Length: 556
Image (cartoon, rainbow, N blue to C red; front, side, top):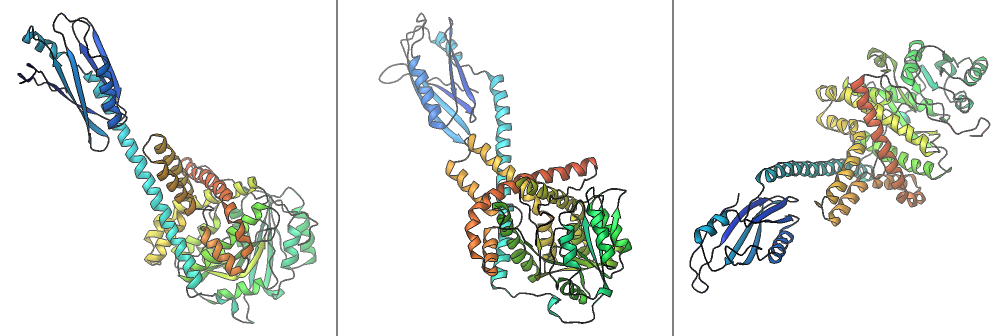
């Protein structure tokens, strides 16, 4: 509202009438004033884009229109000073001191006209005020979310930094694989397969030559609706090796969890060992894995995965870096600190009896390994990580194949998060630190969509003029450096793993992890959204097999 005051006698120049207006404006709001003289209106408009900018705009407008066209009432020279005072960050009050110097013909007439000197479109101003109140609320939400993103990234950074320090200077735990014992248990080796004619011979040749008593091992390749020659190759090996007992699944739904459930029903082993079809197990790996179950608290076991084709191209080399940081440092540190090392679903094993008692694998969840991890921990079992039990895999050699793989991982992991967050918090079998680490593990694939939205948030704030460019760049560098290559470990974990492995030359590839970072962030976000859609619509998940690149005649 405009406030009018009139002063009388000035000692030097006679009558001075000072009209004071106090008008609240918000950033971006347009100030509109109408000088009315009886014959026509003179309209002044200015936008609040800053205190000094608004003041200069008013001074310019008043100087440009200091004389009224109708001089029948009075002859006037206008002198105007504008003062703008900030209020509560974005709102300001505009004070206009307008001093008309004149010879009075009719003081009462002047007062009548003076009331019409400045008319603000009140309804329009109120509408703008409401709109900009909403805009201020939106800006507040954007800024609060940006702080939330930085907080989340900082927590994960501290976690990974703690793991790196532990792996560097802490006491290292080892599993039971160094124990020598001739009393080996009966085991069943399960190998899920779908159209694996390129790899089936390689893994079966390795498994038939392992150092393990033949009377205590059975190998069950799971032929899951293969349309190529996988079934024929399996039958050929089964005729030559009595320990190979293929399971041909030609009806029902396809998927790794469903196939594993069917194989568990016919498996005779006390302990189950699982390899994916593209893996190349060493000769002594089964003995080392079976020994770990001598500990009665161990419900599952996880070994280390190493890419066999890391020399192929840039992608496979980057995945080799990712694997080294994720296993050599991250998994081992969690095992050292007695937190929650993750059962990975391959180069892995578990006790058959408790898994069957807990219902086996959920066919609706794509990440059956993550589900089993939390299912065992919540029910009082432990998962151990054996860093020296190493097995070689075939890493994806094309970016699109890698993208589909991590998209499936993110979707399945998020499905587990929705299902097990409450049981994890409520379980009496875990300590507070284990529960905290379990929450970090459950939410790890949410960091990518959170970070992606945070980058978009910072761009919006920047173009609205709500962030300095230096702050924007620093925030962007801060966020990207914290989650440098997706959802495993920051660059210092990769560096430490390379030092421990004695492969420091691959550290030259660290700058190229930026490509992997953006690929992971984008497709993990897709997988996260798909998991939310699964939760809302109750749709069924379809297993997406990773494409193989090894040729049938290739030596391994």
